[in-house]
Image (tube, rainbow, N blue to C red; front, side):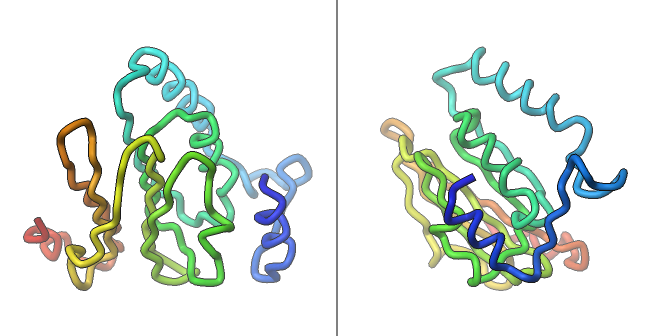
Length: 171
């Protein structure tokens, strides 16, 4: 873990760290199939080394799963990584969350819910199109230049309380 990130975790009294070795059963555990997903991503990257790989994960708090999420990036397993329900606010700076080799785009709600973020490989020219993001929806629109073609990446988070019908006309 980056020393700056570690220091921020140490200084944040709202976060409680539970050692995964010492924790009682059921606390601070990663899903049992996390290793399988990583293995699958490794195999996918080996099979298609030149393809762009996009992944999405509803993380339910980046604060407590930062290491797990960024491990995927540090291993260069994906080119674009969308993270939903990041549960961050402006007390977490971009510098705290940056990963070498990736651009970070984020749209935070607050530390108790929602939020979306995207890591895009620096090998893919990209820029956020904030002006085209729909009002009232937690979204990130990013223009990607892949070869000679421009692509629009639209990532959003729909809270459980939001009716899906609200999302039908956003494109």
